[in-house]
Amino acid sequence: MNERDPQQLVYVIDDDEAVRDSMGMLLESADLPYCCYSSAERFIAEHDGSQRGCLVLDIRMPGMTGLELQQQLAQMGSSLPIIFMTGHGDVPMAVEAMRHGALDFLRKPVNEESFLERIAYAFDQESGDWRQKLDRDQARQRIDSLTEREHEVFLLVAEGLANKAIASDLGISERTVEVHRSQVMKKLGAKTLAQLVRIYLQSE
Image (spheres, rainbow, N blue to C red):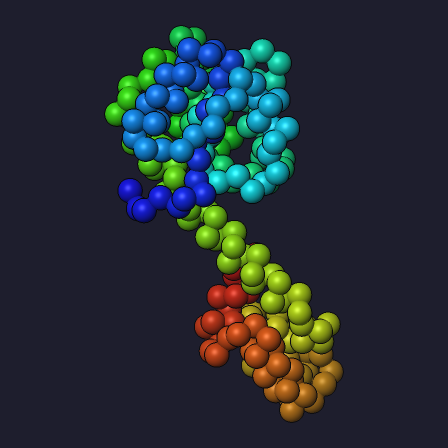
């Protein structure tokens, strides 16, 4: 496992108090910060998109089920990895959850070693997703600083068009394209065409 981001927490969501207590003790023994919720509703009420880490989620709960929470988080654009905990007879539901992006499902009672291994994997995955999100947001902010004409030139350059072809396409002089291209590179912090294309791809 890579070094854990200090902002990452394990969010345990289960209506069974005994399960929450046992999960908490296990996570404490592994020096992993966590937060427990007795219902999906309580978690979603506090979720604002800034949470880091992963969810350990019971698939069957009164009120909002684990599957329903997974669907709602997906609609909110959450990238938190989800590890479902399932009881006997819940495996078909867990398989369905994985089709919708869940990281894994563990049978209750969970094997402690396997559980901690999956948490480590979830944290590593979430760190990568978070860095990609930061890169994407930063790229979009820089692109938003371009003027309308600069943005047009940027898109055509990123598509691989030469200055002459861009000038013809936009109905402007090749010299004007060169000026806009220079401004685009400066505003985006790109020194090479490869860096400019990378920024374009990061923004997608």
